[in-house]
Length: 222
Image 1 (tube, rainbow, N blue to C red):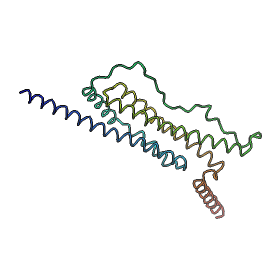
Image 2: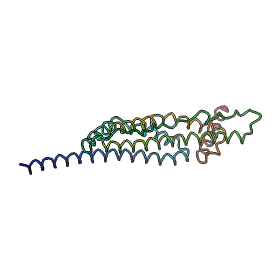
Image 3: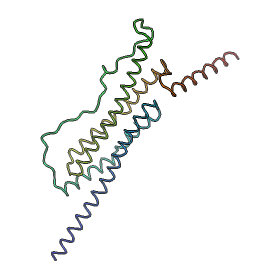
Image 4: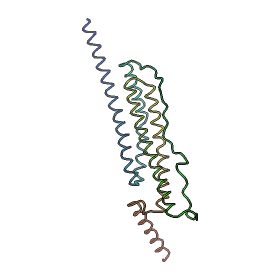
């Protein structure tokens, strides 16, 4: 009889570990997606690929949906059964979602301001674009890092830390679309003032502008 009880206990433990492994693997895949998007975003921003940057920010919001929360909660519950509830932590440090300070994005001088050279104005616009791009990168990197911590906490059975990490990751990804719109606005401002600063994108913009001017002239001549 005792052997039978041990056998049943072993089977329960094996099933528990299988469920933990299944959930952990799925959440590791979510981590991988977040890190992949964070890595890809750097190249997309450097290439001024506004459509793909927008797609990346939309994707990162969608990744951390309700299914992820349910899986994280379930993993934390199973982790607590497997390892026991973790002790309370007294050394918690509250993390803050990256924010873009207003003073870090000084307004670009107007074109007709006498005390500002055109070169200084272009330099200001470039700085604004770089600042907003860095803000977007920091948001995604923060979200990926917080989710990694949340997943690790859930595997230990620490539901409080897991859900707090997910909350912070969601706050960061939720800020990404606004970060994109700010970056895109800076991109448009630089494109209007100095399209040559944007490489291939600038050339495409010049071609479009030239086509529009030609079409407008042709329409006026008729």
